[in-house]
Every structure is written in structure tokens, then in C-alpha cells.
Image (cartoon, rainbow, N blue to C red; front, side, top):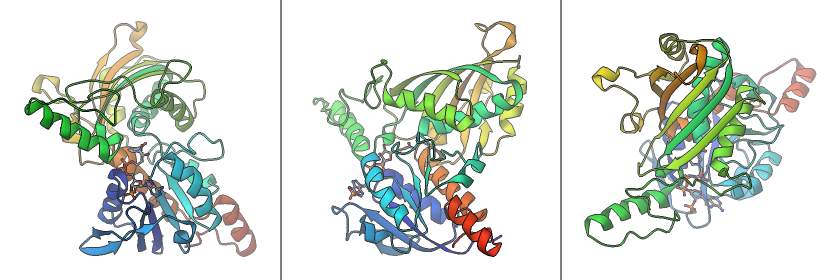
Length: 361
Ligand SMILES: NC(=O)c1ccc[n+]([C@@H]2O[C@H](COP(=O)([O-])OP(=O)(O)OC[C@H]3O[C@@H](n4cnc5c(N)ncnc54)[C@H](OP(=O)(O)O)[C@@H]3O)[C@@H](O)[C@H]2O)c1
């Protein structure tokens, strides 16, 4: 089925993720009749260039959603908490990149190649996972389905673009200051990020973990449908502009060899194995930046787990693309192509009345 052109709003259109969303929408030829870029009153009236056309940025208010089919939100949790329900009440389906709605039981949290079917039950909002979770779960899915998962330990090495445009500027400024022999001023992060590694991403929780680390734990369990999966995470910000890296240790239920694991990973759509250590081939942030795939390598047996049930590996992906914008657009593609743009209840009432299970588009 070729979906009819939809009206698509991007909330946070002037931000690092929002700009990437617009780029990915046009790059992938998403069936759009109209693109409506929205931001705060600060940017309203400014223009952006899309495919050689100049489009004015509107202010994200309730009225701005009239006639919109799908809105991709990426303007932070506060904006999503406030405006997503307003958009839904005006008949919009929201794909939300913030953490505001992800863990709500009735909000599907979807990674396109892992659990696209979960999107079918949406009630107006679909969650787009955290960038660190996003690149982890396609790898874990392959192991879950083949040998079962017992325990996972993840250490992340996250790029500053995950914090937004101001953090990118802060790293640039600190590198320049260092070269000039001037003090490195920190505003976005609690310490200088240049030439440093900060084990603090988002706020600390009473259990000693950061909120970012706990998102990886809870979101992975939800997406993989493994509510009791034993998982621990340490999230670290490093002075890289784009693409997050992760060192992952997995304990599986049944034995598995690195060779078999590589075969399983290569069979997952959007997952690319880069693993030839003798030739210095392994996933790199510099090579993943600008790409939509998740890269996995350094796959090896973990001898600290008995019985051949342990693997160690390295996963890298562009946090702005697959980690945010690309997956959001892929969710939009899933609901548009499968007739799931309208909320589940609206679809069942339409199909009950007319026998048509299609979208309202
Ligand atoms: N997958 C992920 O989990 C992932 C990955 C990366 C980022 N993120 C999250 O996504 C969000 C956006 O990230 P970013 O890197 O694009 O940030 P950014 O570069 O700082 O951009 C923020 C965007 O939000 C807009 N905005 C701010 N306040 C607003 C308001 N009251 N109403 C409407 N729009 C408003 C800004 O518009 P103005 O130009 O008007 O200020 C701008 O377009 C952040 O919350 C970030 O944590 C998530």
C-alpha cells in the first residue's frame, strides 16, 4: 500500500535533533503533503531551508497542530508533557523523542527493527527510546531470540550532541580555550567536558544511578518484553561530537560463540558487523556519524562467565540519527504504511463501521 501524503509537524525543528528529523524525512522520501516546523516563540518567524525550499518556523501552540497527522516532538520533556496531549486532543499522533511518556504503560516504546508491532496499540503517543537504549536493543534482541538473556552490563561513552546545540558549542569553546591557554568555562556540564570523561548524565536518583543509566535499564526491559532482565549501566559523557559508543557484557542462558553471535547480528536489519581486529576494524564514532545503522564489533567470549555463556562487545551508532531522528521517522513509516496513523480505538471504530482498517490519512 502506498500511504497518502501526510501533514507532518516537527516540534523542536531548530534543534540538533529536530533539524536531523527534517533531513531524514526528506532524505527517505517520507510521504509528506506538508511539513510544519515548530519551535518556541524565540525562533518563530525564522526560516529553515528544506530541499531548496524556504519554510517559516511556527510557534508550537495548540492551534499549530490543526490539520496535522503526525507530530515528531524533540523539544525536551517539559514541552512534550505539556503539548503532546494538546496535539493528541486535536487528532494528531505524536512520536515523542523525550523521556516524558516512554515508561507510561499505555504508551508503546518502539525501536523499528525490534518491536514495530507494539506501535499498533497506540492511543495517540508513541515513545522514541533514549539514544543509548536504541543502539543496544537490536543486539540484545538477536541474543534473546537465539540463546536467551540472563544479565547485561553496559558502559556508555556518549557524545555531547546528546545534550543539544549548547553542549556542542561548549565543547568547541573549551577546545579553543585550551589551545589559547585560557580557562575552560563550563556552563552546560558541571565540569569541563574537553579532554575529560564525566560519569554524570542527567540527574542522580536515590539508588545512586543517574536517570540516563536507569532509562537504559527500564526502557530495554520494556522494548524487549523482558520485565525482569538483569541489567546495569554506567553512562559517561566524553568529548566526542556525534555518535555514542557502548562496551557491553552479556551473560546468556545457553552457550554461544562469537562466530555465531556475529551471524545473528548480521541478520538484523540496520545492524552492521565491523569486526576484524587484526586489521584494526571495529566500530568507530567517526565512521558511525552521519549513518543510520548500528555498528557492532569486538565480539569475543567473556571468560569470566562459565560454560561459554558470556560475550563482550562494542556497539556504536549516531545518536542524532538512529538514536533519535531516524528511528522516529522509521516509526512514522511503520504507522503510515500499516494503516496505524490513527489511534487503535479510532481504527477499530472505523473498521467496525465501514470494514475499513485503514488510516485516517
Ligand atoms: N533519542 C534521544 O533520547 C535523544 C537524543 C538526542 C536528544 N534528545 C533530547 O531531545 C531534545 C532535543 O534535543 P536537541 O539536541 O535537538 O536540543 P537543542 O539543540 O537544544 O534544541 C531544542 C529545540 O527545542 C525547541 N524548544 C525549546 N523550548 C521550546 C518550547 N517551549 N516550545 C517549543 N519548542 C521549544 C528549541 O526551539 P528554539 O530554537 O525556539 O529555542 C529547539 O528547536 C532534548 O530534550 C534532548 O535531551 C533525545
